[in-house]
Image (cartoon, rainbow, N blue to C red; front, side):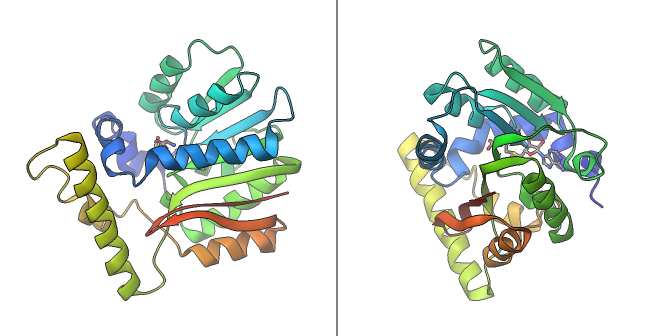
Amino acid sequence: MTEFNDLQWAKPEYTQEYRDSADVYIVERKRLLEILKSFYKHFNSNKRNSSILDLGCGDGIVIDELLKIDNSIEATLIDGSEDMLNRAKDRLKDFKNVHFIRASFQELLNKTTLLQNYDFIVSSLAIHHLTMEEKTVLFRTIYSHLKVDGYFLNIDVVLAPSDALEQWYLLLWKQWIDERKSFLGIEGGHYEDIVWKYKDNADNKPDVLTAQLNLLQAIGFKDVDCFYKYGIFTMYGGKK
Ligand SMILES: C[S@@+](CC[C@H](N)C(=O)[O-])C[C@H]1O[C@@H](n2cnc3c(N)ncnc32)[C@H](O)[C@@H]1O
């Protein structure tokens, strides 16, 4: 089983680098967050005080965006990185109903960290660090901690189903980064190697999208679908 402390995410300089660069290399990050908010508004916003769990919250960007459209949310944010959690605490310091747990997914899977039941469970760009076996246990844990009619939504990178598709998806990603650099006026070779660093990083264990959708269905999720896709970047989920 993957140990959080063996991941690059355990190093503060790595988490800092992500925070500094994510807006440049996460494909359509702003749009992904807009689609997430649309999803939340459509399926959840008739409730007040919805309980939301964010798995791998990073600096709290996802919950911050959701709080902009519903400030009655009661949110629990989990991350293995103390540094990321401190950033999230700072970012969300004006909100009362926000709770922070420093725990790795492995601790959740081993049930050493106890969870309640939630109306909505979200994760962004974190679950691809788990093997398929670990994803399976995590998705089951998510299902068992969702209230009936609650939704799970995962924004994540996935593995292309063939080498030919992977080559094109990685090219699309590189083109997107180049457009973004030109839009932001970033010059030079910075970010040139992000795509290859992602591929070579043993911490990344993406699986194909269809396998993850099938898994959610097999666990019992309804309305399972991919809600967005751009090369390897996807948003998918389902309802309990
Ligand atoms: C790419 S960042 C995404 C952060 C944030 N969700 C976002 O969308 O910007 C991945 C996050 O997942 C966390 N993470 C990665 N593997 C983890 C694990 N096994 N257990 C807990 N957190 C993990 C990292 O510490 C990091 O904050």
